Amino acid sequence: QAGFTPLDFLACYEMPCGIVSSDPELGVRAMRLLVADAEALLTARGIAAAQALIVGLSVGTYPAIYLANRIGARLCAVAAADRGDLMLWQSPAARIIKRRAIQRGLRLWQFSKAMRGYHPAQNLAGIGRDSVFVVGDRDPFIPPRRRAGLLAAIESYAPRVRVATVAGGELAAPDVSGL
Image 1 (tube, rainbow, N blue to C red):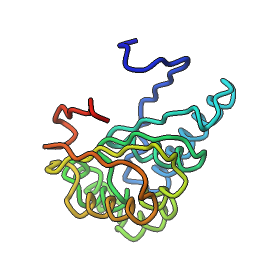
Image 2 (cartoon, helix red, strand yellow; image 1 turned 60 degrees about the vertical axis):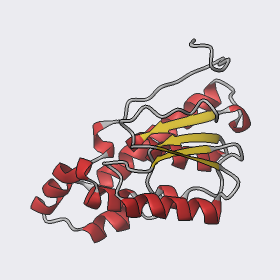
Image 3 (cartoon, helix red, strand yellow; image 1 turned 45 degrees about the vertical axis):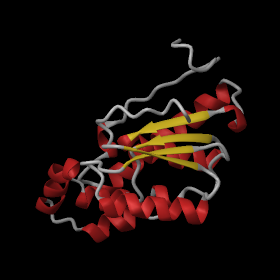
Image 4 (cartoon, rainbow, N blue to C red; image 1 turned 90 degrees about the vertical axis):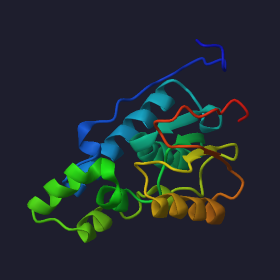
């Protein structure tokens, strides 16, 4: 509608509360259900993977990367990280979730086990060729190790995608006009 790109169809998902959860199985289940719904919607609308552009912002990059990899769609991921389990344990934004998990007797290894195979860094090889990652050089919510891990995974598994680095992080207003 803003005139950036002609779109015949646009779908927008609000992340389910369970996607960031102190219960690792619930978080994975919420992500998989969201991705299954999006896949079904694309199929019902007759949108081929080559025509789709999957956009994810912040926590929404988790299901967006997984979906784009599953179907081979183009991806625009803004403020992504390499691993969901480590983000829950290391990001200041997830401190309450980590605290709740520890109070429930859960540890990082349980999140790592539940999320194995779903991490963004493990789901890059199948994304569309014209994909873009927008990363902040000083994102307050994405620890530098998680950003570095994502960039290393992109270089290894999706070297043809574009990476745009912007000042600040997901709260900054990045200029992506040149993308």
